[in-house]
Image (tube, rainbow, N blue to C red):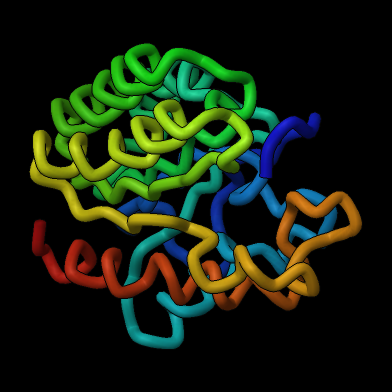
Length: 204
């Protein structure tokens, strides 16, 4: 998920026409297929799911391992200008939390990402994260709550906790105990899909 190095490029998905509506994934290593083959990651699986279900969207993965909300915000204007996405999936914040960044700062960065994307004409899917309890009860609670608060404020759909179905199962993670295995990637996609599909159909 989080404190790793490296990045994933936003290459055009195979088989998707250049003028297809774009889904931009702005995330950290959870979306950058850290430690596994790129084609095994949930973002690549998303492109395959779209194709299988007859959606013509093209997925652009702008995720980078180790990314923070601040880093994502810095990279966002170029990504919006380059790809002109119809949908932006925002999967950021975990690294901020593990580094103990103030919740107010995380909120401000995510707010700016959402507003900028909406102003560019994109619909947003916000993907929530949680922080281990050893960061303190108040910080853990406030960090978790900010995603729901932002979703309500900006009226965007929310995946409450990206790792919901694997968090308690050590076998679903690589040896570092942080990054999901290749086998876990379909489960991550399963978390995202119910909130994403209405956006594909023109919903909120």
